[in-house]
Image (tube, rainbow, N blue to C red; front, side, top):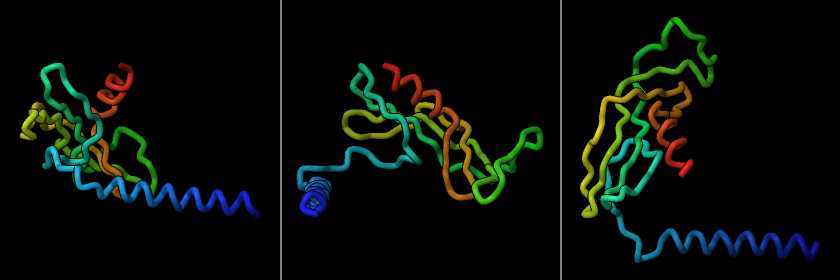
Length: 124
């Protein structure tokens, strides 16, 4: 029972320290205006590049492929995923837009490009 009490105390202490770190006064917003940001990478030019999943869309699923059954599916899509560039002063611009984005009936959103970008960026 004593071990369990110490474990609970450690979990509570960790939770308090995490909450304190999240409300630190030395944290500031660097950039805004993202749509489901996923992959982040600092470029050699000092800019931050962000792969964004977009918002999905209302386009119906293709009839040429099997769909995930409800409640998760079906998936719908659109072309609103993008890659953004953020300059050192925090200015966000769209580097590449109009990329495929999908959304599930339960609300999950995923940009198709992010799969490629994450795989490539995480391999480095």
